[in-house]
Length: 183
Image 1 (cartoon, rainbow, N blue to C red):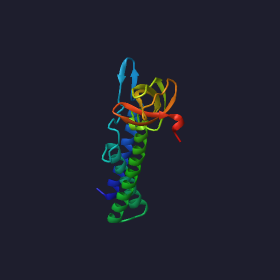
Image 2 (cartoon, rainbow, N blue to C red):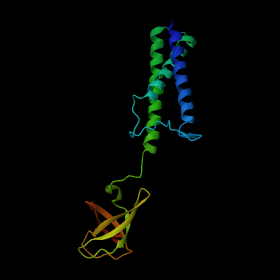
Image 3 (cartoon, helix red, strand yellow):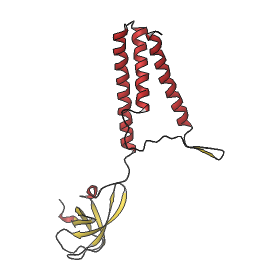
Image 4 (cartoon, rainbow, N blue to C red):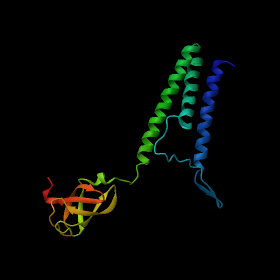
């Protein structure tokens, strides 16, 4: 078997994998006459891994393409051809990983938040905060309206309907100050 045939075969395998993956993706999550097909293959781990089927297939495709070009079009010998094939495979796999990382980081960003995300936000007092006691505030964080127990950071009274700024959380209780005090 010649080196050129190996490169061409790897290129063909990579392209075939891409076509099959595309066709399976087109039929993912469809309902065919009452038979539910769910072939979505969602990656729920939060991030793509550099050693995954997609990245390996992309490397094989790039390796085959680079080797084919080096062998047939540039007429390079075995060692320079292997270097070109390896480099093109690594570049394409790296680019695929970067694109997947970008897509997953944006699509996996849910509406979950930590209380630290609320620090500095403006909230509304929905249950009056008595001097030295606890009331309740409502605020919006990451598009969600949330409620929390609240105390005035300086221990003063804050009336219902007033705007406050969240300074910190201690446990589930927000410590706030009236918005006029904010700079």
